[in-house]
Image (cartoon, rainbow, N blue to C red):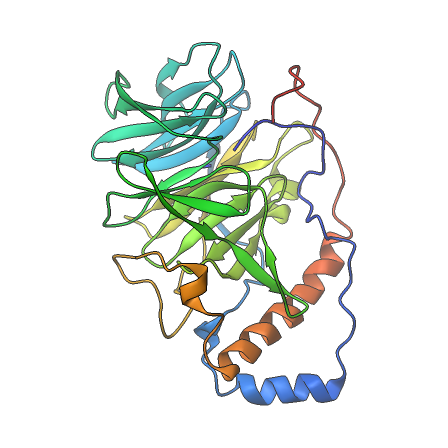
Amino acid sequence: MEHCSDRSGPKGRHPKGNEFLPELPSIILFFLFTVVIFQPIASGQNDASAPQILTIIPHDSNAFTQGLEIYDGRFYESTGLYGSSSVRIVNMSTGEIELQKNLEDSYFGEGLTINNDTIIQLTWKENVAFIYDIDTLELIDYLSYEGEGWGICKLPNSNNFLMTDGTGKLKHLSNNFSQQGELEIFLISNSVRESVDNLNELECTSNGIFVNVWYEDWIYFADYRGKVCRTIDFSSVREQYENESSGVMNGIAWDQNNGTYWITGKNWLNYYEVKINDNPCFVSGVPSSTPSLVSNNEAGGFGELAGLLGSLFFIILLHYPYSKKKSRDRQNEKPSSSRGDEK
């Protein structure tokens, strides 16, 4: 699950944060509303409020977090940077590191996922994924792939994976990492379909895909057709609990036993257990408990006109106050890493 290095850049700020959507004429809003009332809310909504924090435990602030998973009541975490990359097992009650394996200095650790009692950890530019024993962290095998590795998640009830490489598309990989296809993650802005670039950390659930975007304190929730239907803003968590040394948010883990999620970030002070709305995005065509990827072409937009206008209404109307809020967010920058080529 996850990405990469920290270059200088905005922290916790949407790249379009200063753009304000124009006020829509009241007659258009009225028309859209009359359509929406006949369309179930599940057709596409945003979480306007900050996530509900349930638990906070300490996080190693020296950990340049690249990926986070939960298995058998323990955190499995990947960290990056050349010379500092590792995979580790962390106590979920105390935040203490129970076991850690360091990578050789020539490898930049990236996202990780759990597969059949093993851990799969990506590397950034080295084109190799390491496979470890889940209890001992003993290296038992490896897989090769083309391009950069950022984040990875395993599809529920499947032997396949999704992987990010910093673009706006997810790579669909088989169990031997051969590429089966791509899935573009997109949202609708001002009635225009826009790709979401810099896709990073991933978490695949039975209802959809949670994806973190590099340098944003937002998590996007998309269906298995690629459409973003919900966003969760974690900037308030950073402002209340983190400090100026905290890097970008990076780390999403689904606790299936409790139905909650844990998030953290690069050099963050804490792990946060949060309650997130993970209901399916759509009433029709929702991903089942055995999600199958649908290509963007097959998905064909949003279905009937009512669904399109309903989704557009919620995205435009609810994104407007977000834009105002984000224009006030801090623009602090995390110092560049010592290596100029590190992301």
